[in-house]
Length: 131
Image (cartoon, rainbow, N blue to C red; front, side, top):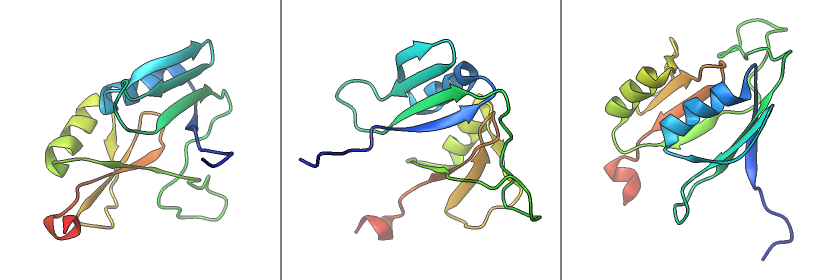
């Protein structure tokens, strides 16, 4: 076993609890740790998946995607979330509070913004990719 391992991805937000609640609904995760300005969520026991943490950052500025002008707050990372049905999961994400990005660079991926403005992608494996 490697002496180091990635345990979680941390996203800043104006309200850590509000953003954690969105991802709890979207991913079916559960809360692992909660503090006044920090929340750690992860998949239910026995289920694979990457944990996510949320940190309240009062000076948080949402990224601009795609970046249009020098000086815009650039996206530092985004989450790729695999789904079985791209259309229905996109509609569900929007119903949970996500916003569909105006620019969609690929037909088989949907770019959305979470309630704090972080871009994330939903994608479904095609039959050709599965082979």
